[in-house]
Image (cartoon, rainbow, N blue to C red; front, top):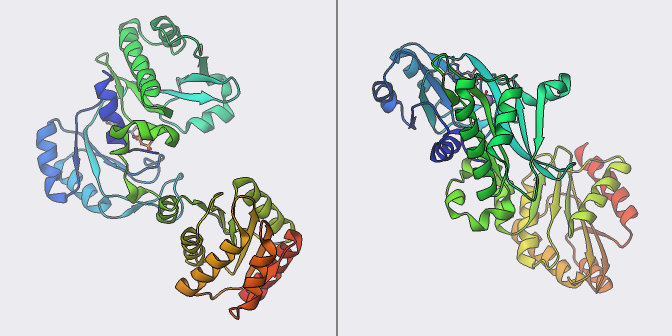
Length: 390
Ligand code: GDP
Ligand code: MN
């Protein structure tokens, strides 16, 4: 799960990491009040969306007058922000963070993640902050400082101090750096975080170390034990289809192809997608309906696939282990009755009660093509889908 910059900064603040003074608004009427409250002469208007690269996308605006702040707010609020990290549609801007402008001396990068190769929580730091860190890592990997935390121990002040030295931080900032990094580590450990980063972490001429941006991703599997974090979820920033799917315990991911897939089991879903590709088609989605699936869930899956706009055919591939194929067949028929069928569909059933399931589908008149062989099913749907789209 992702959270907004302002929410990340609130967590930073609770762990003694310095953040700029800021006011969150969702209304143009509050813009000038926010400036008065913050004081000063420079403000930064920041779109709150679940994506980075906002600076490049026009979602971070430096303003030198209240009028400029109001103009920026008017221009951004209620629109979609497109950045190098969003899709072409962008993400809705429902809230803006108005921050007191900071005078930047240096821009650093500081983050923590789980490094799968070394199997350690790893500190990443760089003197090249403010930029796309993936680009820095690719083009100048020597500019990335990596420190793997001993899995049997904890990150220590001494470790932090060594990283501060590698970043060439002034001695006067060493203590603030230790507090900042230990704060990030504390959040990481206590909240089941998968990625936490400050980019940029700035130094100011008056000797402060300030988190100018904040990003935190949480491990979904740990969310059940963090009600406070779950309360920060903003579904307006999520894919609406994937959301609906998760409510029905369906693992659904939209893709760019044209053949909708409904499969039980993640591995089988991957294999099905590969076979579709192998025979010249392209999958419109990844959809795992799970092991002990029900007719209701099959119906929901159908609805999701059929509302995907590129879909020109559907392949259902079920291997009946625990689940009985005749029940799946009933589910498919119920779904078609409920949501209609306006696309060619191939159903491949194999395993428990497969013959009964296929017979049930063959008896109907809604135009379902049945197969018991997966390769034949893939070839068939690719052909039907091509016919349907011409
Ligand atoms: P991102 O593009 O989504 O990562 O958004 P950031 O919060 O990192 O902002 C992008 C850039 O805007 C930062 O790297 C800074 O260079 C700049 N910026 C943000 N806040 C301030 C500020 O208060 N003063 C100045 N001078 N620049 C700022
Ligand atoms: Mn940033």
